[in-house]
Structure formats: C-alpha cells, structure tokens
Amino acid sequence: MNHDVDDVIQVEGLRMRYGTNDVLHNVAFRAGKGEVVCLLGPNGAGKTTTIEILEGFRMRSAGRVSVLGEDPAHAGEDWRARLGVVLQSWRDHGKWRVRELLAHLGEFYAPYSTASIRRPWDTDELIDAVGLTEHAGKKIRMLSGGQRRRLDVAIGIVGRPELLFLDEPTAGFDPQARRDFHDLVHRLADDDITILLTTHDLDEAEKLADRILILTGGRIVADGSADQLSRQISGESEIRWTLGGQRFVHSTTEATKYVHELFKQHGDAIDDLEVRRASLEDTYMTLVRQAESGGEAVAALDFGRKVGTR
Ligand SMILES: Nc1ncnc2c1ncn2[C@@H]1O[C@H](COP(=O)(O)OP(=O)(O)OP(=O)(O)O)[C@@H](O)[C@H]1O
Image (cartoon, rainbow, N blue to C red):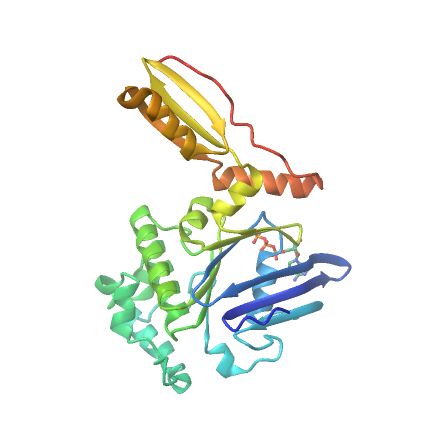
C-alpha cells in the first residue's frame, strides 16, 4: 500500500462475498485529508457495503483497509469518535428538542477531545452551521423532512469528526437548503475534514467532489475529478455560436484555440457562444454502460452536429 501520510482512507484489494455472491472485486482507492470524495454507482453496485466496511460495521472478506491510520475491523471507541456518520433520518427521540438532543449526544464526545480538536462542537454554533437556529427549541417530530435531514447532518458532525460519511445527504432538501448544505460541506473540507459521500445526484457530485469514484458491479471503473473523467471519455468539446443569423457547431479537442481563432476572424459578429464539455452525466452513463457490457472504451460521445438557423 502506498503510505502517504496525508491519506485518511487507503483501500487495496478489497473483496466482499455474501455467501457465494462476490459483490466487491479488488476495490482500491484512497482519500486525502480535507478531500471530498464522491462514490457514485447504480443500485446494487456495492457502495453501502464499501462504506460499511470503512466504518467498521461490516467485516470484509479480503483486502487491506486503513481508515485514519487504523484497520476498521479492529479499531476501538477512540477511533470511532473521530468518525462522523450521516445515514438515514433520525427517527427516535421525537419528543426531544433539537438543542437538547445535540447537547446530549455531544457529551459522549467530550472525553475524546484533543489539544487540536475540541470535542464536541459547541451546540449553538453547530445549530447555526446547519441552519437550524430558528428551530432549535422545536421537538424533533415537529420538524419538516428537510429540517430533520439538517439535524441528521448536525448529529453526524457533533463530535467534530476528522472523516465524515454522508449517505445521500440532500435527499428531500429544497434548492436553498441544498445550496446551504453544499456551502457547509465546503467549509468542513476547508477545516481539513475528509468527506466520503454517496449520491445519485450527479449535479451534486460535480459541485461537491474533488474526486469522483464510479463503482459498478463491485469494481471501481473511474477515479478522478469530474473534469478528468470527462476527458477520459471524450477529449472533445462542443462549440456553438451564431454568426449572421446562422447557428454553427464544431467539435474540437482545442476549444480555447478554436474560440480565439473564431474571434480573430469575426470579432463582435460572434454571438451566443457556448463551449460544452461532456457533462458528468454523459461520462457516468458511458462508463457504467461500458463496464456493464464489458466493452472497450467508447472513443467519443455522440454530440450531434445539427446546424440550424435562428
Ligand atoms: N447483507 C447482505 N447479504 C447478502 N447480500 C447483500 C447484503 N447486503 C448487500 N447485499 C448485496 O450486495 C450487493 C451490493 O449491495 P449494496 O447495498 O452495497 O449496493 P449499493 O451500491 O449501496 O446500492 P444502492 O444504490 O441501491 O443503495 C447487492 O447485490 C446486494 O444485493
């Protein structure tokens, strides 16, 4: 295993078998300090299994796993206190009030405070960070679905984790709550918290992730930034523009150079310029289909080449 001191997660040769069913085949990846890594993949790909192994909730069949420097299969409570987990909604304790519950849960982390990380998070600061200040005195059963999800996030980070697992964190959020949550994730990452999240929302993955892992059929088929993945699939960008009322389209691997030439030739006569690289959705669909069919790399996505008149 490559022992980078800043690696918070190191996984190598990870295999998982349920009975006779192999669901993870030789999975390998890493995550560095303060990195936001997004695990994408179709239903049944093995995301939950992978995350549960990293959290120490599931025993792996084979492979090497190190999380915060320890093997999750044998790590103790002091290790667990350094992790944050946001899974499903917090359904118990409906009669508890938001501030009360967070203060109570926070107490469990106090013994794990260190010189550099003061645990738990100050309750009111935490409530403010997740945008629940107005609801701090409310009973949990009185919260809306989105507010409850914010509470889930607060519960996950109350112990000031060094590594945070988020399972579909924004399911049920309205657009504003989603944006606020994305800001919060960026702030946590700025504080050097490593975040591993699963989502089926590719737009969210593109906005949040420093690195994207695509898992399908128990294998990692892609590992890189959204940009790197799109380049892996198609080196070409599509450029569209309007000139003299006519719409044009051109695909090229050198978009900047092409646009520069275009302006050099036509100057201000160029209108409605758009440059589009393959979206993460294009990339994701291509990689997953490719892996499922066991096929070779698809050279380029079909961008279409219709040229119309305005
Ligand atoms: N406890 C179990 N016993 C047997 N098979 C299991 C068990 N848990 C999961 N599996 C199987 O392992 C495979 C991977 O499941 P997993 O839940 O890890 O997928 P996932 O990527 O999280 O899917 P989703 O997006 O639907 O949540 C599936 O084929 C599933 O049926």
